[in-house]
Amino acid sequence: MYKTPCSRLSGLVGASVKQKLVQNVPRCSQTARSLLQLHRRDPSNWLTYQHLNFLKRQYVSKNNSELQQRAIPKQAPVLTIVDERDDSVERQVQRISAIDPLVTQTVSEDVTSNTQPEISTSKPMTEDAAVQSDSVSSTETPHVNVETDLVREARLEKQWKQLKVDMEELPDVYARLAKIKLTALVVTTAAAGFAMAPVPFDPAMFFVSCLGTGLASCTANSINQYFEVPFDSNMNRTKNRPLVRGQISPLHAVSFALACGVPGVALLTLVVNPLTGFLGALNIFLYTCCYTPLKRLSISNTWVGAAVGAIPPVMGWTAATGCLEPGALLLGSFLYCWQFPHFNALSWNLREDYSRGGYRMMSVTHPGMCKRVALRHSLGLIGLSSLAPVLDVTTWTFPVISLPINLYLSFLAFRFYRKGDRSSARQLFFCSLWHLPMLLLLALTCKKPRRDPEAAALPPAALAS
Image (cartoon, rainbow, N blue to C red; front, top):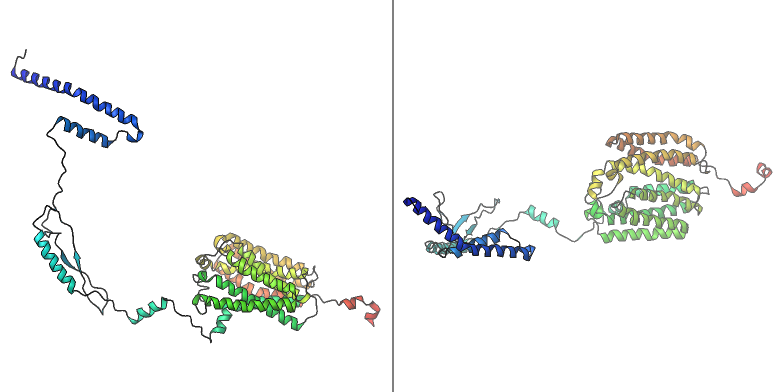
């Protein structure tokens, strides 16, 4: 059959390969059957690379009994020519000394690394190095950092210490706690409201009403600073306030507020009249419980603050008359409208400070609205001045003589609206400082003459005689 030896050899090899394949057919069918069952059981047990690897190992171990799976031993670290030191040996490493001219001390550090169990030649060297390391570590001294006087003073300055109040600085502290300039403006507007009332002037009542209004303003300002200590410390404008600097304790500030508020409201209620006392207490509540928390929540705080500033002239009017009349509301409207160009111009140049303190002001969150509101209320002062003679508060001379200053304020507000820079905001703010006293003074000079009720009841013949 086979004509040459090569043909016979190839025939024998082919027969042997065929016999091997016939023997492995049942095993292959079992393997395929196991794969199908594994696939159908659960999707989580589907065929993966690990299954294929396991089947491969199983096939090799069944067909070649000599092949067994063994763990490959981890190779020993090779020591190069550059670094021939054995890492298993504990050695002493010198650390760079600390930057301190007074104390220079080198610290030794023991560096230890685990060795492989196969390297048996390094064990005697390791033991000798360990003995040498123990001897060095027992003799070395720890690094001691000598504290200088300046560092010690700086450290003690940051620690809590007992607060000591300087009695000589206490009047100045109370003045800054009460915001004496703002309180003076509040008392001035209340005095203007008292003077504008169409009643005979009573000096004693005028003094008591101004005193009670000033004490109520001190209370509101003190409580406001008590609540805003964490935020005032982040602003350059308010970081020197007494509570922020720790010149007095919070309990001291609250005690001062109560010492001003209780007699202030009591004077307005018992000596003046209950309506004025109620307005004073309402003003304290609005400023401390509404305006102060709203500064961190919404831009509506500006409108609430304007309402707070509009109440003092109303209090002066009610202190003189004992009732709430349209003239009192007109004076309050003057203060309400004036505060928007005044405060919006002020807050425009303090946007960074307000943003750092976390206050939501129009100048920070709504700059366009800030400029529009300032212009709108500046123009509103012209309309209110024209309304004063209609309500029999002033004569018709007042709208005419107050028109120049109102127009000038509106012009600056319009320029602030167009430019929106620091210069225009500063000019509008400084103009508002003299505009309000001038407007109230002009209203007082143009006050409508008081008509005596008894004289109005007499006949004209008796008046002529």
